[in-house]
Image (cartoon, rainbow, N blue to C red; front, side, top):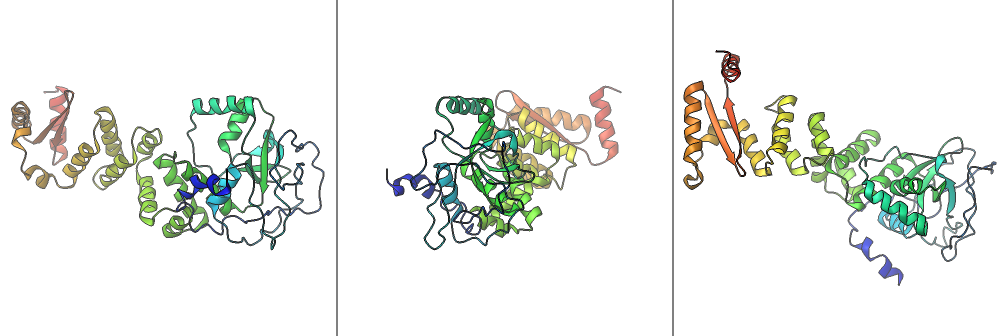
Length: 367
């Protein structure tokens, strides 16, 4: 297979990561100080075929101090990540003339978690499947780490591979050591997650918010660095204004992005507990986005909503009769909405606390 053919999947998502030229150096950036003893910290990897032109595999040299980050040269992050996933590194240019990147074996217990990892949900079945593959065939793609402190490393790319390797009973993992700053590591992690397209909308919103808060990036800058429109970045970040209980439902996959955006429109009219109740009703009654939007419209402008002409063909006389009886009994505006599957909702609008107490007494049977 030619190099052009091998990179076709990456070309389909070229927009992702556009503007990230400054994210990764195009050559090796690990410039160690005087070598220090790293006995037991990493062992040379054996039995793995090397990419053409790569140097012999040997343990990484842990720098005595974190070296200065060399100003990056032009390179696209999607290409960098794709080549890492292919199990090899980009061939350096003659102008750079660095030694080829090395794939080394690093003990898993020396690799710390990625602090910028926003993914919180990992499919257990998929991890077990990957673990079985690693047992049978080894790890096809090395993970990417950066030097930490006290001879340790910090994971940048390869969360699933590390987890699956542990499940497979492996003590070490094939890795490429990179010199990356915090901002570069964060962006690289987020871009890889976006490429996988399996982040839920809460994880994506939290990823954008972290770039904004920790690195003082504007929504436009975040959009350019992740290949996302500024409007999309803004829409995701607004979701974080929802109550925590509702965000938990989004994170669990019980509510999607569209439902969350509609609930956001109700925040000026309801307390957090009311938003949560509406979200729970949407789940329990299996509301569509249109159903949920109707509820929010009722909050925003009830008079206009109720004054709109109704489709007489869709009006159930029994429903309208129930509305009339409740309205006469309570002395308040009542709306009964029937849904498919014998489901529905009764909305009672009260204008004062006295009205509320009267409804509560009637429903509780205190009279």
